[in-house]
Amino acid sequence: MFSPKFDELVQALRTLPSVGPKSAQRMALNLVMKNKLQAEILANALHHAVNSIVTCQICHSLTEQDVCDICLAYDRDDGLLCVVESPADVLAIEQTGSFRGKYYVLGGHLSPLDGVGPEDIGIPSLMTRLKQGIVKEVILATNATVEGQATAHYLLEACKHLPLKLTRIAQGVPQGGELEYVDSHTLGQAMHHRLQFK
Ligand SMILES: [Zn+2]
Image (tube, protein in one colour):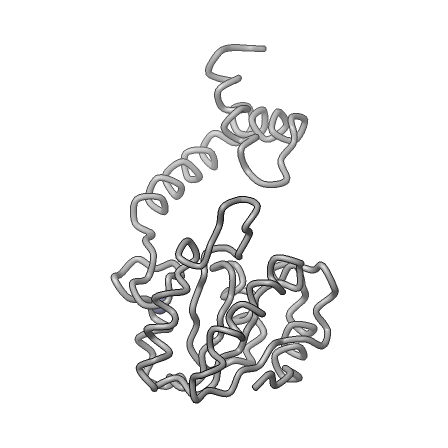
């Protein structure tokens, strides 16, 4: 429109979730016209984040080290493991302040139609961790979507023979809802009133 570089910026912004063509244009105009210093800060933050943030070797959440602070925390319960779909869910649960265990991030959910099987979401390494015997309770906190429920059921079956307590968060999370969009109080209640599966 104004210049190829402006179009490039709009296209780059459009790849962000929930950003349509109009919003992308508005953001690009704001950055190049009114907010040049802020744009430099944003570009630097983006560059540093992309280059420094990696996946935790234990829980597969995000960190700047090999192992994240939650996995390293000595004052959190190693016997309580919360299985979630994404690092955004870890943030959402942490913001409730009601969970003092550890996490395992699947990085997605089972979706046979899209070719996503157990190996693609780290279930074999989760099973290896569970077989070590340190974890006493697994909280299945996958989303309340069809795929999230299917993933929880798959894990329930996979863990049946292990000496574990298995629970599923339930109350308060709306049907079809994604954890990252549920408010902290509701999610805190859902964690507190989790259902025992086994
Ligand atoms: Zn970790």
